[in-house]
Amino acid sequence: MTLNYIWIAFFLIAFCVALVRLVVFGDFEVFPAMMDSTFSSSKTAFEISLGLTGVLSLWLGIMKIGERGGLVNALARLLSPVFVKLFPDIPKGHPVTGSIFMNVAANMLGLDNAATPLGLKAMEQLQELNPKKDVATNPMIMFLVLNTSGLTIIPISILVYRAQMGAAQPTDVFIPILLATFFSTLAGIIVTSLYQRINLVNRTMLLALGTCCLLVAATIWGFSQLDPAKMNVVSTTVANILLMTIIVVFILAGMRKRVNVYDAFIEGAKEGFTTAVRIIPYLVAILVAIGVFRASGAMDYLIQGIGSGIGAMGFDSQFVGALPTALMKPLSGSGARGMMVDAMTTYGADSFVGRLSCIFQGSTDTTFYILAVYFGSVGIRHTRHAVACGLMADFAGIIAAIAICYMFFA
Image 1 (cartoon, helix red, strand yellow):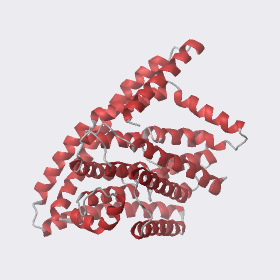
Image 2 (cartoon, rainbow, N blue to C red):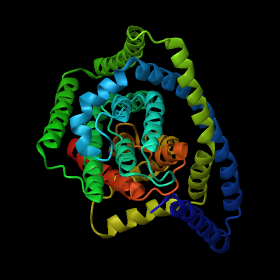
Image 3 (tube, rainbow, N blue to C red):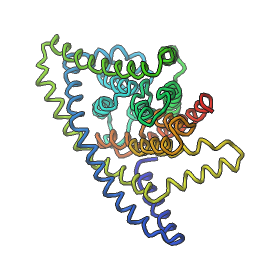
Image 4 (cartoon, rainbow, N blue to C red):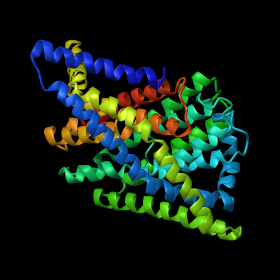
């Protein structure tokens, strides 16, 4: 499955749905709405790329200092035992392992602005190892699944939205989100390993995954001891302290190696600007397709069909009201955020649907956006099993989110 077929499917399904609405129901607004969405989505894609320019320049500049200062290589050596098992096609000790770690760490802390440029840097390094420049390699796919599964320890933006929407305890979804995103990531690793025939049943991987489970459990326990107000303060403070520490440590490492840190920063920043411009066509393509799909009403019909099916089978269907957030999340981060806010506005921030929509928002990441940006940045056209693995991780996150929400809030 490639983005090519999915991109075509979005347009064809949207056109068919719109045609039915026009012919059967006499809805003369649907096609103008779809055309308006193409213009607005194109503008949004450009604005996203333009907004990324400064952030990309900053963080790729910092990464260049880290490379020159030897910190990226040091991280690569430290993580080599685990990465050799998880990314067997990457040469042992290659600097890309340090970049991958920095990206995953930024995602875990909810530092989206830092995670994207670090991820793009990792993709460029992976592309250097790629013998077929337009075909995704196994390490690229595993790396992207780690991103799309969206492991986040501190989902601060969701907590802020809940506070703004009047939730009595904005942080009450913190532990459910952490659990759901952990299961999503674990499922993504397992599914991708099965595709790539990677053996996870070995001492190194079992120790690494076991340690991660303990860290997640410790984080859950630690934050559960705090009152809601203090939890918000601590999570925000920890994330920002760690981010600033990374910048300072990279600069100090460069000074220790007698690197001209300013020149190194400028060199990396130039790469950031070039990358931001290069991803514009890919973002326009995917966001326009998603916008047309939404404007046609296809998303609404999909949700209604699922709700009817669940009800016909005799299952509790109160979670269906939150499904727009879950189904939109792989397509558009801003769209899913809008669905989450809409669910809290319609049903209430402390309702089952309102809370579940927040857990959906935090359990996975924007699969198609990530694939379009990361693969587009290095010119990958054949994505192989990346979409399938990413969507299966998303599905695991959705199922985990529903089960966990019933456990905590039913």
